[in-house]
Length: 286
Image: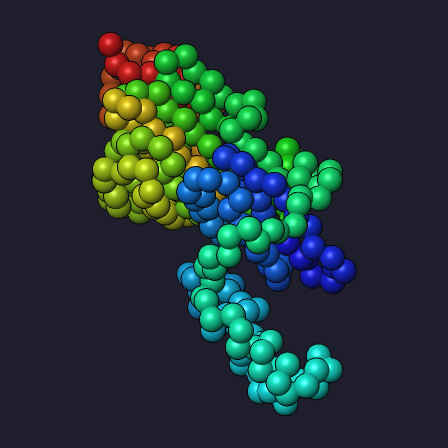
């Protein structure tokens, strides 16, 4: 990457599970130097993009590059080269975005000590929540990874065991969640305004879905388990939960619960006791 106003590039070595924030205006190139397929998932906030909802890419080279947009005269004068050299500069690269390099061509090696500051491997991080037979949840904010604050986002990684569940929760700070299913499969339900079920779908690896602000989402993994990565449009998101010790149900007084749910005191006590023993990640039913 080349950051705005920087005088040289920073080359980073990446591996599976790495998170790399790319600040707005940064120039980047990506190269697969291995012998297998490399999958990179780009997730981000696009409300301020040229076309809201879409990434705005400004390519430097290729048929869609900035160089090709300027005339030969402008390029030759800007870079102090001849007209022939200016044509070669703008027209030699005929690819678009993805380029197959010639056999044996080398690329720069990674910079020393840069990867630790600019890249975070969420797979290797200690989970914030680990429930036996249910799975784990790892939250990543600027507190753990300061560079993440540069892009104004945060992230979570959820790994559900076979037939385990991620209990209903929502972002109380009005942030939006963009969720990518990395492995396995399962079922997702999202409930929105007026109690309407906005989504009830089977999802699998490669699927991407959005949880709008204030909508409540819950997931149940299939028999093979499920792993998904969530990008959140806030640096310090606040999630409200409906299960566990911090459940909103448990915080309400018994009389309010009885009246709002229209249940007898005995049922309210049973419900409250069950809530306190529940967890955000739920193991399979016996």
